[in-house]
Length: 75
Image (tube, rainbow, N blue to C red; front, top):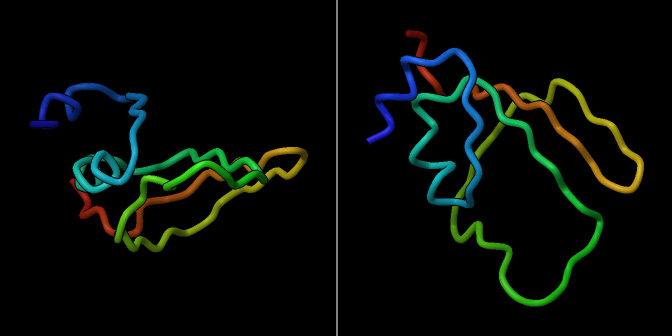
């Protein structure tokens, strides 16, 4: 259960598709790092489909995205 997370104001969670799905009701924001490289197998996101509001993107060698969770219900 991720209910204990609600007791904290800032929590960093690392994971793939399963963690994204599990944390979707407790996370307000996501910080995503995307490297412009592909190779060596699966991306680990399976069949997941999510839509985010992109709030900031910085492009150099990598893409850094601050994304607001549009699916979370207000507390």
